[in-house]
Amino acid sequence: MSVIATKALEKRFGRSVALDGVDLTVEQGEIHGFLGPNGAGKSTTIRILLGLLRASGGEASVLGMHPWRDATRIHERLASVPGDVTLWPSLTGGEAIDVLTRMRGQRPPARDRARLLDAFDLDPTKKGTAYSKGNRQKVALVAAFATPADLYVLDEPTSGLDPLMEEVFRAEVRRVADEGATVLLSSHILSEVEQLCSRVSIIRAGRIVEAGSLADLRHLSHTQVSWEGSDADADAPGLADVATRGGRVVGSLAPEAVPAFLAWAAQRTLPGLTMQPPSLEQLFLRHYGPVAESGGSSSSDSPSAGPLPEPLLEVRAERASKGAPAEPSDADHPHGRHARIDAPEP
Image (cartoon, rainbow, N blue to C red; front, side):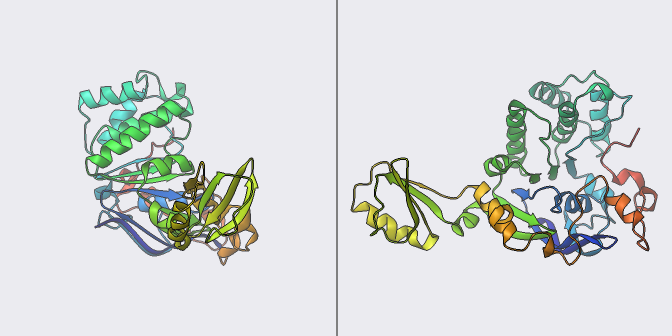
């Protein structure tokens, strides 16, 4: 069952195209990585899924419901964490956690709340204005993980956290996934996604350019091979880009060449033989590295001048565009301000 499904999803701000036909599917019970640099369309997609923006075209479904019309019902079953948390300045962190969980119609058990406060090393008695960026993130994370949800939507959730707290975060994501929840994790930290996610989608210029399990995506890329030696063996079947570096023979194998190479290697002594499948970083750089950029399809993938940088300026850009309709306000939303899950501006 698909917990999140979009088809040909579009979002335009005036004549600028932020999303240009996004097809995203997140299945029940999986941790799904959503990859792309700033400006690729990650946050715009997530804001549509959360009912904070209305799509310009295409289809979207969250937990079997429409993200704009059914936002209140969706948020009763969903927990989310943005990459830049704004808190009520007059409330303490503990009070903010209580408000955020009550907005979902739940009250966290005292024991679970205390465990998370201790795990994230958060002082809940400080006012919102006294928190650093990292501590504001912790408030949102504690609120998200303190009560059960069917779906967790996490948009750059570890922004501002130190490595120790990142590990605490990963443990909590694994916990909720083990309990049957579905997680959509948007991040530019590739190692984090690689450790947590069973499937990934890569977005570029407002389009999904690759999606699947890490195993499937790796199958499309070359395996790096090396062994101790000074001369490249020309007889190695399927070995490409052969060179010698630092006393080792190095090369790469296409997926279909791996079995023949293994059979060949089994008949020889190749000291220190290593075979390394492509990392998530290498998969990502196929679409965002220098080769991809010089290949002629960066922002030109979009029929417009390219996607907007993502944003605090999304709505402002749309309103400023001549002749473009303004983005609906919270008052225009079918469920009013309660459809929002971020804290109101002071």
